[in-house]
Image (cartoon, rainbow, N blue to C red):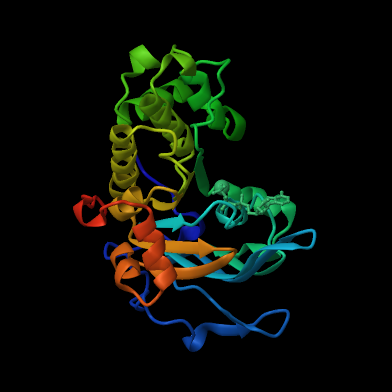
Length: 301
Ligand SMILES: Nc1ncnc2c1ncn2[C@@H]1O[C@H](COP(=O)(O)OP(=O)(O)OP(=O)(O)O)[C@@H](O)[C@H]1O
Ligand SMILES: [Mg+2]
């Protein structure tokens, strides 16, 4: 299976497009001025999702208070933080389901805060969404659930759709002949998660976003979901953005962890660095989870 890289920005084998160091510090020669005169930095090719001073208010409640964030291609970014910190809101801004009040959001190099509603539809297709409880439609079969994005967004023939659905189910470790005709309620939590993932992958998006993929699952199934997230990255080169309450999961899969506290990024970096970093709040947040992070097996490479 081949994943598309919209905008033609397929990275070369070493992940760099043009020899520039994608980990170069902010600033440099790519700055321009934004509408309000503040400096806007054009993302580097490796930076698939970039937020610059993003704010979001609902009425007079400011939920996101100047978020800066960079997610790199083919890496897993895990957003952690307490209830009500603004994690889901942040995710909804990134996948263009909601508009920022101010600031800039670059997806694949394109500032989506400047786009029309119609253009945002195009941006949304770059994301596959995996929801908390897989969010499958219970009244239709697994086959129809997984086929849904193809039926909605493509003009493929019935035969082609069938081939792709069966192929995706198989890739995700489900026996297509057994599972396709079942209803979601007949599956275990882990299997439903796989079906949700198959559906999210149907349009072969370069970015997968997950809102609480392991919540409500037992520890064993949670670990399987973590393995699956990492497998998607390694097999298909997708970038993953994951919201999680699960610190063990964060340490297993994250290249970068982002701790959101009351609408602000409190700390950001590899999970081990958060644990040893300068933010007492971050260290306490991890300690308070009660997870023995030293014994958590890392799956991210
Ligand atoms: N559409 C909306 N209208 C008004 N307020 C909203 C809306 N969406 C979110 N909020 C508010 O924004 C704040 C952050 O909510 P959000 O759902 O982003 O938090 P969260 O970090 O995802 O929390 P949880 O861990 O419980 O899922 C909350 O106070 C919430 O009430
Ligand atoms: Mg949430």
